Image (tube, rainbow, N blue to C red):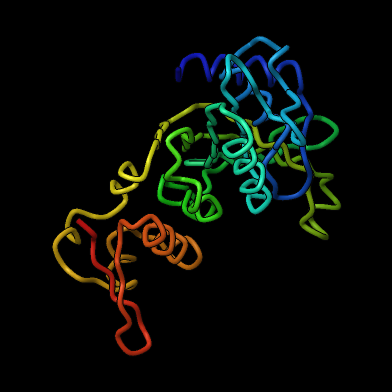
Length: 246
């Protein structure tokens, strides 16, 4: 799978050399093309009309949606598929696990510098997006694929404009599929509860220290795991105290 993904990335970079989406964004077009081809290279399966929605891929009774943005709009679409059809559904959530930033001159293509971004995503960061699907996760026809992807981000800038304003056009190019986590059914989400917490009560601070989740991702994780019945909780003053449900 990883070798095939890398091959598709190389082919896409050659076919669509300058396909950026703007400042500081995923390149949604590139991610969608590559992941759709990873599912199937049969183009007749792409952009299929399913009732009032258009699915990214529909093949052999299975719908695949690749989502890189607008996660709040995803839930109604997936709910419709699950309630109004008998199809199985996969949701692919690509996350950037590592990034190499390459600054290049817009006209000449000359590389000015390259560096590694300190920012990286882990599979638990998917909770910011899984939160929107929490009511649908128990459905046995739904699978979630968390795809951890290494990317190169090309930042093309006019040198003078860059010095004055720091602006650039970017193109995020997937390179390697580092890891794929497939989740089907509620029990698969128990993997996100640290082993140290399986037999004791804990609060958000302790959960954060063990999972390294912060802010929105932290509370999305706790609320999602509670909604799935994996965690129970009680109020203790101004905080919640959680415990793993048996």
